[in-house]
Length: 511
Image 1: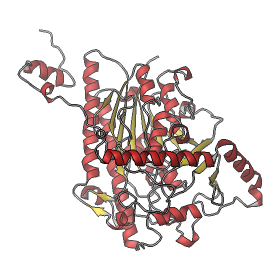
Image 2: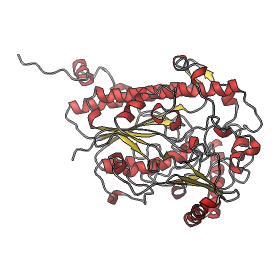
Image 3: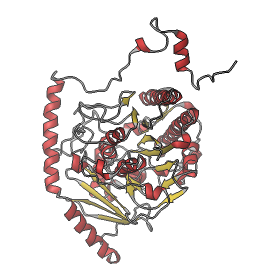
Image 4: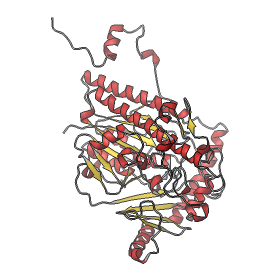
């Protein structure tokens, strides 16, 4: 059986609500929409932890963050944890990461054969929270409302510099695979192109900003004051300063306009990746997947950014198109950790290859339009702005959120998509509430998990202090590059180099 290529195009902080394929009334996402039109759109896909690094480590490993101690943005992703890049390489794939994956620790490849860009965020323990002082802000890296107030347009930002580099490096790597095939190397490949947009700061290039007018920007549908928030949301609101730094309507609209502009900018990167696949003749044998690490509240409920399990924060877009993928929509709940077994399934591997227990299942039955008895997604949050783990179970239309010191929450998304009414104490949902509470107690030991989180935080803060004092070397990734072997050099025949670089190659003509 031919192993199709796999190309994952990942956004950062993109809620599906802000994509045309998921029904946004004004956003311009033609490339994402085109993939959805010829493939499968998953309508209840979730991240497993609504924060960058933990979400990505679950995605890479197919394991929940509590299993691999991937608690926050400064948790080490251990080199001993197998990833889908390891498994796909073992199954004969050439693998590449271009862009962000927020790996923390000395292993900065985690099974990828090629890594063609640096990362955009620190690889060390600098961003370690302190659950023993959960109310203390760390101003150096905590989100705050100044990010919203400074929204707008700019010719360049560190984010656009990065994403343009990611696009260039990813496209060049794909063209090299075309060159390889022209030379007789037909090995399948898996590439992850991972962009930082539309992650805040909400600043867009003028050409994307000007795609929209203020009239194109819907305002938040449901907002709450600090006093109306549930306890966990209030802690998040306090942590990001939203409780006491007011925003006016113009500031909110400007941030949401810049966000839509950056969604369109990301969509252009999707188009560039698809075009590169077309250029090398590989699109028909490639499964293309568009997703994100988590969403963005963007003012909904009075909240911003992520770090909670409400829909705009915890849900992600998930669209698959390519050979063997049906056209349609899948309603079953699923999550990013389902992608590792999905990739192994695509590569014709089996469960026998797994080196550690996997918490997900293959989504290929759903992608083919078949029935799937599983309709569940699990979430865990163990990072800043909480003193205890927060758990989420989405099962069917119901979502249950639990944190030991807080009242539980239950929402019926089929009747209440904006999660306005907590029905946990509604007699009509008594049986469901009791079952979810039992499931949480059976699945997690919150006190034990909290103790482990605090222990790792203490360890990492001590190590970071030592590294800041000069112990060890920086872990930030520097892509290897030997310019002496690129383009045309004195030890090369320039005609040979020109022939190797030209793609498609010239066809031989018979005299």
